[in-house]
Each structure stands twice: as structure tokens, then as C-alpha cells.
Image 1 (cartoon, rainbow, N blue to C red):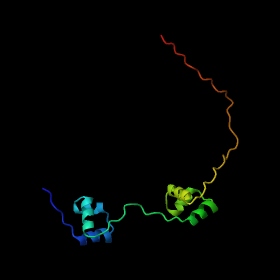
Image 2: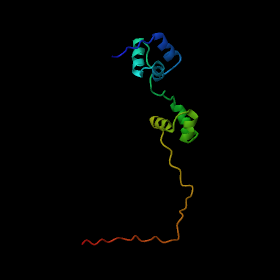
Image 3: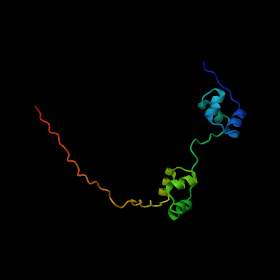
Image 4: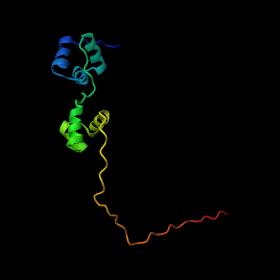
Length: 128
């Protein structure tokens, strides 16, 4: 036999809207599952919050200044703006900023060994 849970709309509004608890936290507090809390929120007319991360507001002007004019590395731009490196890469592509050319090798010479390469020994198999 299933039992119905009655949750007061005022309590839900207090926990979810005012105090900012998640559905999972409310469910743990009330001893039910998050789906039950979601159902009661909709029944009380409380709109659920989005579960997605907030979008970053990096404008093309900021990206142009930091990436093209100041020539900052992407990791530094990400740290200054408080976003991930991938977000900076995605915004750079979205705004049409071309990637900077790869930096040249700081050691333009090649270090070679005096030893001669060892010839590869080949194994021959004889089938009987």
C-alpha cells in the first residue's frame, strides 16, 4: 500500500525559493524522492530552476582586447574571466578570432647523437 505525502506549499516556497535549497536537499529533508518534490512544486505553481550552469557573458569586445590586442594566453584569459579554458576556446571560435600561430621552437638547432643507429634485426621463420 502506497502512502501519499502532503507537503505544504508555504514550506516548499520557503525552502526552494527563499532559502535556495535544491530539490534533492528538500527530498532528503522530507524523506521522499526528488520527483515527489518536483511534483509538489508544480502543483503549488512554483517554477523549477534550470539545472544548467549559468551562461558566461564574454563579449566579443573583451575577447578581442584580451586575445588579439593584449596577446594573453588562453589560460590567463580563462582565469581572469572565471571560466574554463574550453569556454574561452569556444568563444574565440564563435567570434571568428583566428588562432594565433604556434610558437617556434625556442631551440632552433637539432641535437644529434654521435652514435650510429642500430640496424633492425629481422627474424626469419622456417615453417616445417
